[in-house]
Image (tube, rainbow, N blue to C red; front, side):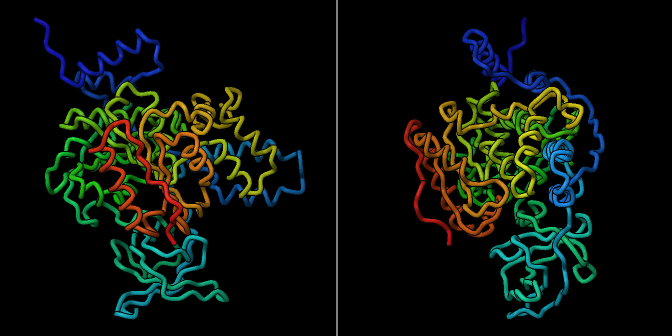
Length: 460
């Protein structure tokens, strides 16, 4: 007698069979197909990522070589292309720390004096990461800015690890809590089977059960970030009674590396998120919502377009998302003062089979497939975009264009002042309100209704 399939396996089998009949371009990651049938995953196979040139180095090299014109164009293009697709295991600590004053604030708080940057002078809560990642402090509001000296003084709300008194530099980050524990959530460490091993994730169960408890919120962090980025969405998930699954994926330093150890800009990472959806379905979920930050937005869009599990996704919440990689690369080339032709050549190296020896990519990345402004008619799921007009890394333009071209499914809520993916940090009340309202309509309202939250109002 043939053993009955697990309900999830039965549903996916029927979806795949339908896709074969209709010719739909929907697939599943190889390891995810195996995991539907509960086959054990292969053991972890971690490989150390190589150090690479950082964005700041691209600008420095450009300035140094600017006078040599066409002779250095291929070199600049090669550096640019490699920088885009290569993970950086040790992000630059570019914020100077001049003074740390315990209990010297207006009401006895600790204070820290930092160098003025475009990031450190914006209001809100942030993290200061120091000592090559071993130290983390939560930084609060500004108490003073001395523009002449180039310093800003801010409140230190809590030091989670490390010694600020002995620190001279650090890195400004958008996450606020290192783990769910510091944010006050009860959670479990779980392992999600992916290609070449297991990807660690945090599972946060809601404190109360609601009609939405069978819909999980799966957060997808951005390029160069970690899963703690998604903790800023958990307050709303808690209020909705939704479990939160904060996942890692290939090349982020937690999950197993891709075999080429390169970013696919969403084109290769999506099977790891599909694996997370499969994990949720096998552990009680009947549907999921994806919450993507920056490149995590590009990854999430690939999931709903390419995965056989896309019918289990109710909608997407995207924060400062990469909607069009070509636009982002043009912007990055411009702010790093690359000649226009070098930026175009760098993009071509990422897209072309001829560029593989330079970029190290196992396969070229089809950037046009990642352009959702042009492909706006291919959007099939409701999307809420939270994006700042002051985003200095991923411009808001493509998000606005997509929302204008597909008004039925895409809603855009604009913010001001916030830098890249820092919308919650600048105005958590507005962020939570927009997300909560949209989720309520998505999960309780008519499926075909217009999910609109667009408003001329912005965060001051």
